[in-house]
Image (cartoon, rainbow, N blue to C red; front, side, top):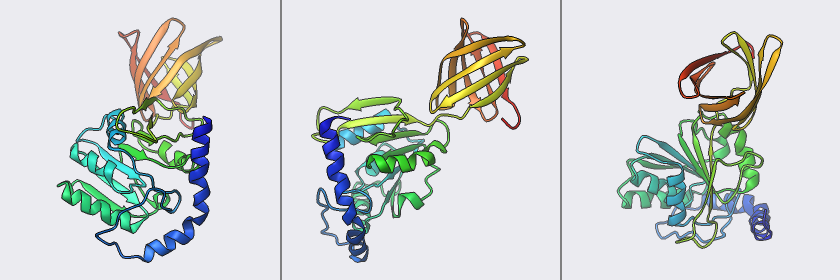
Length: 277
């Protein structure tokens, strides 16, 4: 982490000690139509900092958002990400604790003509169910990302997660991007694709294949009687798996306790997970 980024994180984090009292007062305030959020205003867990339109566009591009997707923005603020996703035809939902920001986002969605696809709710992200999402966006502090990480990893394989500026600890991103035009601060985007879980014992053509997994990285051993071969270059891309054994390149798709695909682009292969593994 760079010195500048460390300073920014510390500056955001130090304001969090005041969050409880500030949100208690905000929760009783009426949502006024002339409400304008201020950069750095205290929220429940973070301070509010707007995301530039250029950054939102890049994040949604990285997620390869389509009209078939369901997007959930955690800590949706003024609604820019949800509204932009709805303009692209997706069903989008924002979860935000500040009632004034929720009301503002709803007004903006209505003015943009996407209120039928963009919804906002006043709720705590850690008490909300967003398991229906195929795309999750967030702009939260690293500690909050780490709290969310177990929840995100339980989502359907292939779910895309895009974060503005802050990472997921030792879960390395599948892609990164810098926005250099139209974005002055907080312009680093990171993409993760939720991997299928494959760790354990599998049977493949009368042989035993044991997978070890760390997020999207996969290792393992293929045993055939007394012989043993080490799996190399293993990686998950959602429910898609690829690895090399000897000189053979395996590519396949995981569907629960079954995976199947081709070896070296032609010969079919199939593996089943051992019961209890």
